Length: 320
Figure 1 (cartoon, one colour):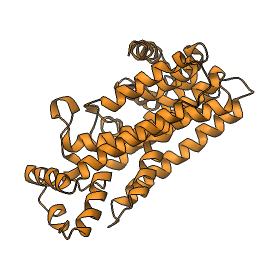
Figure 2 (cartoon, helix red, strand yellow; figure 1 turned 45 degrees about the vertical axis):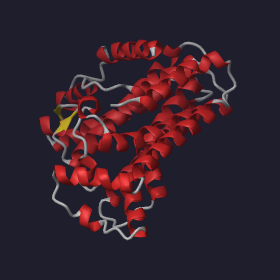
Figure 3 (tube, helix red, strand yellow; figure 1 turned 180 degrees about the horizontal axis):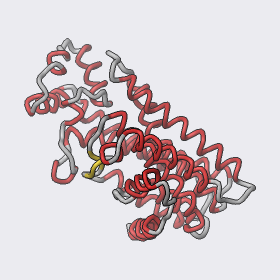
Figure 4 (cartoon, helix red, strand yellow; figure 1 turned 180 degrees about the vertical axis):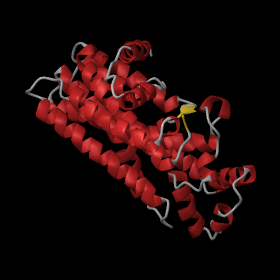
């Protein structure tokens, strides 16, 4: 993953010298603050990798910044909705300042994202803007679906997949497609690359759900079983409830347990009894291989796609 490390360093250097504005300080300081909280920067790296297939990866740097600005705008607002005190181990924007500052600085980041996304050749600008705007709305739809699920008794697996694709995966696809377009990709190639990244993102999110149940806390970097303790309707939870009903197992006796380690251990065992653990692994693998199928449709020399295959493999086999 040498290229990934190189692009991460390149992008971080760009973020370090980024000046979105200075006054009013209460508007711009939170923007710079959240951008410095770190993270893997997977989304902007996909933009750079998309352009790199066809030439110079740096050509898509403005669009990579746009994707990262949009992502962080959504994180600020998500943290407000979730009343989250921490983000990546640091104080969230609305906690460090206040909710009004969080809302306004987030809005400002969205505007900045559009300014950067538009820094491309006029010939591809309509397609770039359409892709970005469509994705931005889907992310909002995905977030609302996630909120709706909290008060729904039953959620279909298909609805859950659509939710994680809208909330998470489409932005990966958008980042990849826009980078490729800026690099000079054809429409067919950019569409195939969108599918590659979007499907890979779906595998990534299901893997996240799986690791939340069975991951090594030391490697995963957060409390294992958090989704179980909060009765979050993940793919494992949804499928377990469906299978439990079919097999005459009282699912409610598990979900109503007090939120402690016993509940986590009980669900870990229940998932194994119902073979939901292996089902989740199969879905992780299925979406991973679907993403590689999409990648195989890109009409460039095989070696140009090697970094993307390595990137996909790295995400697939990750333990954190």
